[in-house]
Structures are given as C-alpha cells and as structure tokens.
Image (cartoon, rainbow over all chains, first blue to last red; front, side):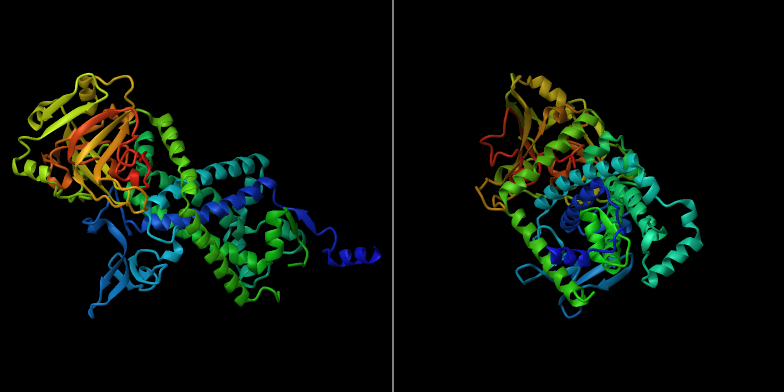
Length: 287
Length: 260
C-alpha cells in the first residue's frame, strides 16, 4: 500500500495549484456548442453550394451582376479545361482542387462551391443539409440562451468574459499581444483570470459574433421576417445582405475556432481540455 | 511535450476529421435519424405561428423590383394539354376548386380576371439562396374558398399543377408521377397576402413564371409558390396523394413548412 501512495503522490501536481475554473453549465454548454458549430458549418456549406454567390441589398440572383460581390464557380480556361474560380468583386482567382472544382467523395472531379470533405453530408444534398441545419440551429440557440442566462446570473459573464475598459487600452492590449507572441502564458495566480486578448476573443464571440449568426440566419426566413415586421432583414440592409453577413460571420467563427484550438495546444492541451471536462484548471507549471 | 508532435497532431486531426465526416454521412443516410431531426420543422412552424400568425410579409416600393426575375423549376411545360392551352391563349382553361367543399367551382381565366384583386410587391426567397422582388396581382384565395364553402373537415388546401417536373426521386423509395403540386394550411390559405396571381410586373403572367395562374404565399419559400395552377382541392390529409408529404419537393425530403 505504501508504494501505491508514493506513486500517487509523485504523479499528482504540486498541491494547491488546481482551482475550479469552469462551472458545470459552462462545460456542458461548451461541448454542446462544439457539436452544433461543427454541424452548422458543414451543413451551411452544403446549403451555400446550392447557390454559391453572394450579393448586397434586398435581393440577388443570377442576373444581378451589380449586386454580386462573391461567386464560386467553374469555367473553362483557354485550353478548354474546366477550372475552379473564386471571383471577389472584379478579381478572379483560380482555385481548382479546393473551390469551384474539386474531387468528389467517389474520386471524380465535380463542379461544386465548397469541396465534399467540408460539407455535411459529403454529397450535394440541400434537403438533408437544411433539415440538419435547422435542428442544430434550434439546439444552438437554446444552448446559447442557457449559457448566457447562467453566465449573466452567476456574474461570470461580466466579471470574467466581457473586457473592462481599462483592459482595452492600447498599452494593455499591446502588452498581452507581445506575451502571446513570445508564447509566454500566465502561470500561478495570474492564470486564474482571462487576459485582454482572451476577453476580446471570448466576449466578442459570445456576445457579438454568435448572436449575429442567429440574427442574420433568421433574416433569411420569410416566415420570421414577416413576424418581425420586416425589421430584421432591414437591420442588415436586406435579405441578400443578411446572407452575405451570415457567410462573413461564419468565416470569423472558423477563425476564432482555429485560434482557440491553437492556443489550447500551445498553452497545454491536457490541462486546458481537462479543465473544460472536470472544471479543474492547474495554475502550476504542468502542461 | 513529446507526445504532441506536429505530425501526431496533423495525423490525429485528419483521422478525427475523417471519422467525423464519415459518421455524419452514415447518419445522413439513416431515415430514422433524419426523421428525428425533422422534428425541428414542428418547432419552427409552431414558433412562427405563435409570434406572427397573421403577420404580413414585407412589401416593397416599385423602385425596388428586380430588373430580371429569375424563373426556376418548370419553365416551359411539355404536357400536351398544357401546350394546347398555351396555343389557345388559355381560352378553354378552367380552374377547378373542389374536394371538401359544399359548392365546387369552375372558373375561366376571364372569370378570375374580373374578381377583386390585390396588388403586392414582395420578395421571392428561393430555397437555393437567391431572391428576387416582383409585383403580383390577382384575387385573394380566401374569398374564393369561402365562395366554395369549406367543409369543417378541411385542413389543408392542395394546389395541383399542369407541369410534370420528373418522377425520379433523388433518394430512392417509391416512385411518384412527377406531377407538381403543393399545399398550405388554412392559416396561410386565408392570409390576406395569399393570392392567385394572373399578372406579374403589370403584364399577364408569362409561361416561364407559371401562366395563366400561380399561387403567391408570401411567408414561405419559392417552392411553395405553385405555378401552372389547374385545380385547388380542400383535403383533410395528404394520405394517398403522390408520396403523401403534401408537395413535389416535400416528397423529395424538403420540409412541408417552408417558412425558413
């Protein structure tokens, strides 16, 4: 028995450096949100592929060249070979293999906006994509409301997530940026709070970006638009604009997730991921 | 961090991503799972009816009309009867209103053009993602249904169309005839903006847009806006009608309630 005790003690982190960081509501909502965002992204790209073009204004369709600002498609080059193209404004970029023209799941080339490995399901299927998208949109909204209400009432949202004005001063943000670039992550007592860049990223995503995704998504619903008295799409400059903003905010969410996962990996994935499962975060040197 | 090399991360990420997507593909092929996710349609329908049962769709100014309104779905039906009507300028065409009604009606295009009409400039939202604004003119559906006298058992209004859009079903299963049809509940049937449009952008409805008569049900997506109307039928269920889901696209996996 004595040996077991010794082994246990040697594996355990220095006592007193773990603290309870994430509430049970935060942890459950976080992982439900992970599932929702993965499915909403994959099905959203499948839905986008049904009309891979974006416009500004109230409306937009094939003939509305003046309103179109983004188009993904396939055209034949001078040699008659089909090429994938992305057109942003007047600038065309060849994107064969990734956007516009890519290899389908069965290995044949196909003209499609986003490639099959990014979409749910992997084949072109607007009906299934929509069905999944709206189920997980409901789950995403309800889950987000539970999180926001729990975080607002516990004080977590204002105390830990939303940045304070003094944290947004250029010197404070600059200092935190330099620390990040040096890959110097806080340890000890200092690790018990979020720092300015973290607060900007988390607060901006939770309070601005994700609500914008919901509102621009609802702005595409003719039934919801009628119920909202036309207020919603007008807030974004019309339905075609709302669809464009939905696409842009999707890109920002993907950017957030990429940086978030990178930071978890750099700051110590074991400790970070454990804290989002058990709630316990180690402020010591353990990674 | 010896266990977390760049290679193991990339490999792990690729394997995890591949498993995730193939798992999603398996679920997307499962009728039971898709049926379960389809419950969201009821939530969307219930919520939108709760907050805006009688709400009006936004109407626009003439200056906001799309310069070119895209035509989608059937654009030139090759059905022999329909071709004959086109040749005759729809002089022999009749709209039937029947099913669960007390007084079945049969109306010529001239009869319909004489009815009091509503004009509305609205946005047409296609399920694919594009949208277009057009001006529609025609009688409201509600007064026509009142004239026919709906029986108390009537729950849905079905719109039978002249065009056959193809019988093959993308996902296997039983074959339908491919005849286009659509349906709405009585709330949308009696909604003031639900009209039978015979005029679009101040001109008689063109063949590409559904001549001589198309449905406008402005709080739902484009596939509900049935073109080439031939018959309006009041029913208590969709059982026995094509594949039983209440519409051509509904039989192919799309939601019956297209308010989102």
